[in-house]
Image 1: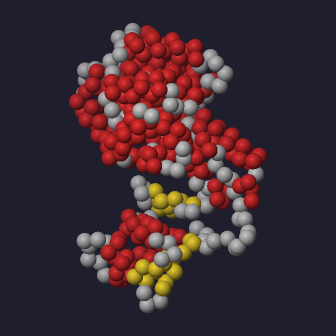
Image 2: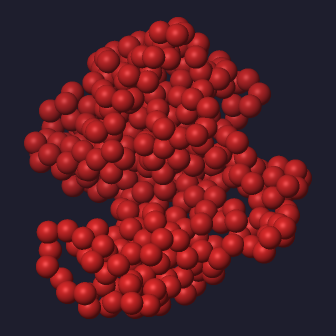
Image 3: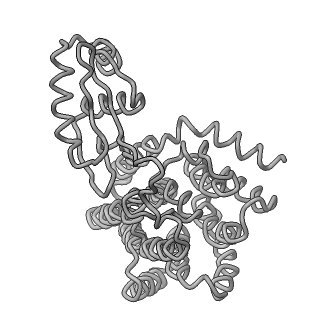
Length: 383
């Protein structure tokens, strides 16, 4: 099955990825939605080139280029329907033959889940997505948790709202995305309602309670409450199963401290502590978050050039990780830091990162989907 990435006009499948031109992508998308159906050139012109005035030869030229670019994908082709137009076809396996018998192998499924867990641990979202898109070629069935989680990683909010997985498995991801559309006080109110209602699976309930509420507390100007919450967090991560929470919690504490009048010596100590942790566990999400916090600290000290450079480096690492929500939360931290502190070049910095934040929100469809997310969460909380 082809994966169509509209952001980059890229198609993927069978371990292969190919970039298309915008109109090539639009034409393929049109044909793929109606695969098996023949379309006339007039229908294709109306569907792909609305309000434009290309000639029929335009369709033929694009079909020619598409066929060449589809060659690496077995079983996908564009058939010419003589005297009429074109039809996208998929070759299916012979009747009664299972092309991927290994997909029923429970041991393989467990091993692949371990691979996903390792990529998850290192913050390699791109690796997770690449592996998930090759299920048909590699012959395995994706673990239930990761079949939902990969949509969170790639920022597919629409799927999280309407996907076929049980709502209970999608709810936590939706809540985290909703926090990115709300002012911190409103976001905290959502967290408190969800925690009180206990509608999340136990592990996700705990993660929200000890980690994900810390930044909204700090962003809302309630950093002292966040520091109190950190006492609970430090005790919680001593429990078995929370070994990899140590560095994210230390990064969260660093941000909380930056949002208070913590002495410079203490900030230096915290940065050194996080950097030491990263040396032992060089996870991309933690590296990016640490660089971002160091950049904010530089801004606070009116070191504009060094601060922006570190923030941009942190965002680049988070982009490299492929974890869309992590980059969004990084920009969330920058937004509320800039609202709290006055520093050299503040207006330009605010404008730059606010624009990036809005672009990332739009990329996930958050402005358009916010109302639907709120309704869904309210429905869950009133059951």
